[in-house]
Image 1: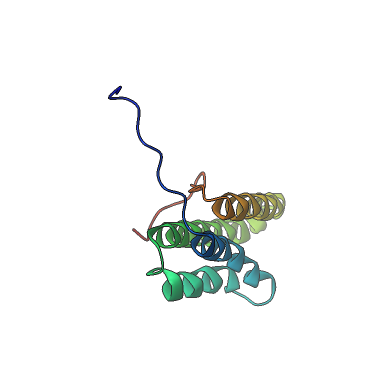
Image 2: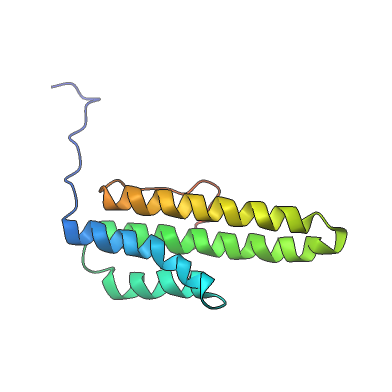
Length: 123
């Protein structure tokens, strides 16, 4: 057997894939109340992280991305003083929406998703 060929990782169970997807989609709680985009993934991840390593990894990834988005939004609010913050905040919102949907779909397919530009504070 060739050394550079790796055996594929086993596909997570349907339940693990579903909870990983919920970790990503829980960020939409931010549409309902302030900081819900942080609390949603945090709560789902804390409750279900011991279910499967896949859920743990995707929960951390979702939480790290939402922390990054929150920090970027704060910068956008500060930049509103010089007007550039308004279009940047709109662009940030669209990017966060699209990337969160992609991550949720990939997680439900059993593929580990890594957000681009996410500051990974939670290890």
